[in-house]
Amino acid sequence: MYTRFVVRPHQRNALQALVPSGRLIAATAATALVASLALVLSAPATISIDGQRLASDVPAVTTPGGAYLPLRAVADATGAQTSFDAQTGEIVVRRGTDVLVMRPGDADAKLNGRRVRLEHAPFTVHGRAMIAEATVARTFGSTVRFDAKHNRVAVRTPGAVVAGAADDEP
Image (cartoon, rainbow, N blue to C red; front, side, top):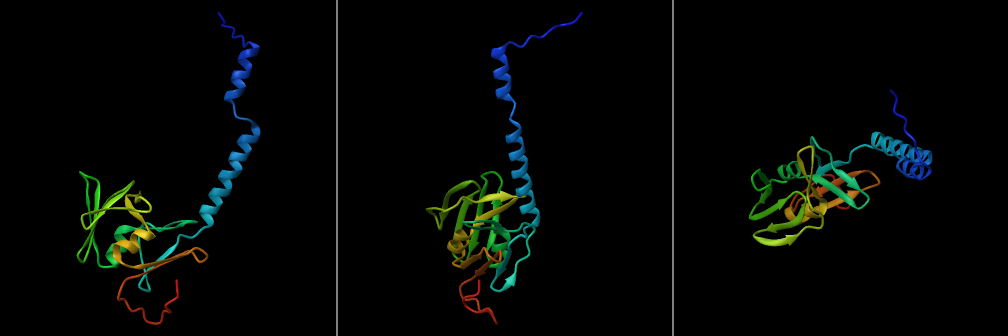
């Protein structure tokens, strides 16, 4: 016994609407290929703290608007301490008398007990918290420069003397 399916003309249009056109598939494939090649051929941004290259298991994330740095690696290199409370999801950064409390995905934070609004919410990459360069500058009192042309981020902490480096070097 066979079952025969009949597709009526008004149903053909509905079925065609569900199937993407060949042009759309080709454009999507081309875009994915270009993005993949750009990712493969690009080198991760290098990070230096007071002239010393920073080693981190997660590289900086760069965008045309700036860079996001791995919090723990930067904090350790600048003499700050970080902790994570798994129950509340809070990340606490302590440096000297300053304390910053924040949560990934939330631009609202507390700096020394006062509410502050971060320019960009922290996020995680492979379990590591990433923070915007502006947050690094604000939290650590540092100067942060992102050189998009050379794909590098330079962090200078207050009072640090970098031998042999020009003041205007990124």
